[in-house]
Length: 525
Image (cartoon, rainbow, N blue to C red; front, side, top):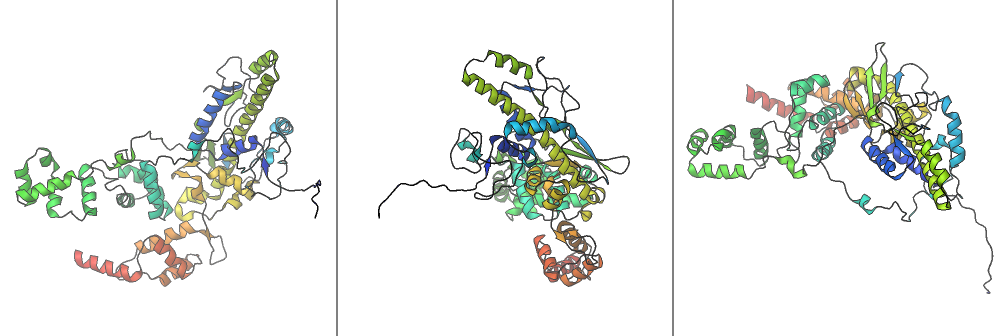
């Protein structure tokens, strides 16, 4: 069979994304610290970008604003709204203001894209090309391509250094399924210093979180069971006691030694022998064991810079009973495009390379300011809808947390689920009940027995734990009894689901709980 050359046309589909679209997606999912670092790098790289001072004026007297970053600008009419009042207004109002349309249309025509779909779903290779993302342009690149471009950075694949707070929060997420107690735990972890000691006041924490001191102390005791051993202690004696208990060496003699550390500091062994009731050889062994413990367990994670948790959004109650949702302007980088400088250097440009570089800088700067503006508007829109959905939790607590998923929020504000997912990643809301991550408000649903509104899984877990905490040794609730009580509260749930939630909270069975309560009563009586 002869081999002959032939020309064949083949039509394929693949998702391609402009670098500008990829930049916009990255900006949306960045935390406020990552965003600040990114904008600082762009300011160093792009001579047409100008930083805006705190008073809203550009650093350079010659700079003219063509676009402003989210939150504030030199021109008050061109900046995005930095706050929104959540009430009974329609949730689907257009989040792109009418006065933005001319510049928006201009941007779309210049960049050959569509800002309405700036955050598309991560469609796999081979899927249909999204509108406005057609290939064929020299400025496009295939999403997920395997080639290593100029931005390839092998250091990006290195694991970030784990901080003490990260380590403790990871253990908290596994050990405590109750969202209310997790919030308390996160608050307490924020008060643990780099050496591993808890430096806060339990009464103040309880008042701040509107809960009981006993509940706060119980969560602190949970944190004290985490690694590294001794973390969360309020004193050196408590730190050593925690470590000795884990080694099963906290006997009465050792308790007396830990309670009299001032004698150990004075090297008064005779006094230590008397208070501990041991001889010279035993006290020497006990002192040697104390010296093998770690008095500053948190230092094994190093003493790197500790960054405070800065919320992206503030939620405050309004005087008329509504919730006021405001962007944190301190987390919004403010940059402008220096049009005057651009006009000057364009006239001086001679070679095609210089003109191409300036055109690229102008396009990049314009898109960055537009993306920052859109990022701020999108965060505000998503946060406002979350607050509208979860107003019961904000007003009354975790038992009123509603089931919520990404699609519900996305449909309400006319965005895609993937956009909402990116917005809620690494973003925090400061509420009257503490600073929480946006993703905290999303949970699965448990149907209502009366056909009414569904209940969130977190609120059901909280209700189960509350019922068990209130039981006595003579009236321990079985899983079947819990099901009946929950159905009486309007929660339609299966027995196996109750058992799963109970086991997930490390709560033993009713038989084991009865034995423990009876044994405790005998010890006390």
